[in-house]
Image 1 (tube, rainbow, N blue to C red):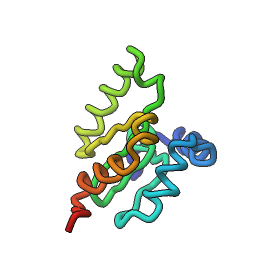
Image 2: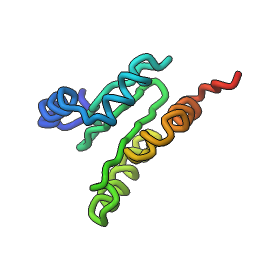
Image 3: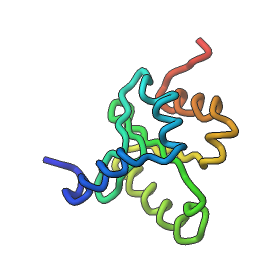
Length: 119
């Protein structure tokens, strides 16, 4: 039994083929070789997550400017509430944060996944 809407499959595939430069950076320079397997553009329910790791039930979302407008913030709040209700932890980073603090973003993902990189 699938846990997402069937009509999202094609859209998710298109999003994987056309990742933003920020998504490409995070994927190719970090998540692709992460100790736990992340999937790109993973449908969950009626949403498509930028990156999702089922093993630790962690979603990583990269937010462009549209996410900081009133409608975008309301949508993201509902989306996060739904995902948390499904037992999925959501980490959100702005595109700007990714470029200005890539090491901090990486560390936050390690910690959320239960990996202590300092040991």
